[in-house]
Image (tube, rainbow, N blue to C red; front, top):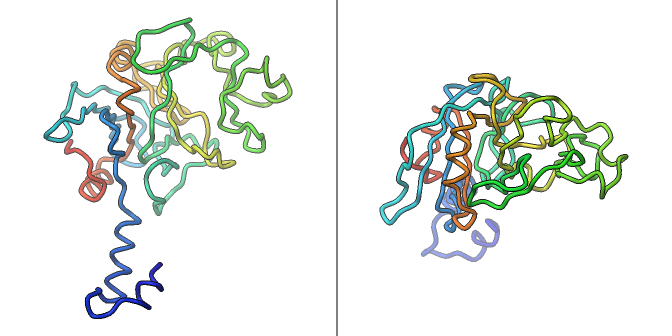
Length: 253
């Protein structure tokens, strides 16, 4: 594309170097999709910090408006690393399977999920059964997908450590209410899988790579979120957020 511009532009066109810089700027700019009107932003103090604050914004006529006081959240046990989402590829540590890091970047939110047959939320809802697994085995053709072993077969979920009914498999309530985060949407092997928002084990207890919170805060979040608003989730260290805020058109914290 740069070659074509340089080959056919005349005096009215900018210099080759200026065109290159313009294209580079465009390629590194991340815009929240125009059809997205709800935004969740998780901010921690550093790449290594395991806890942070969750902000909620609604897009109005005047721009992004904060809609609720910040929510305390737990993040990955080793902090954050760049994930794969709506943002351009970034230099730095990249999210990998099993690294204990929550993905940083901009991501769409998917359906809610949980143990109950139904739940109060404006999102779509998927009830989990003892046969539901999220596949975290990088060599599996079902990597980063949530599947029903009754449909795909027991062999297909062999080795996965993400039984979605944690109350049955692991004896806790962490997945009794949660939200799918659309990280690594092309399911690149080893790039990180099964990223959710869910209930924390205890206040301040870090996760294996998700964003966790209290049940009361999760309930309020589920009631507020609306699938028709195309909600977006962002996670970044504070300094990184401030560095990127103008170029990515992010709200002021």
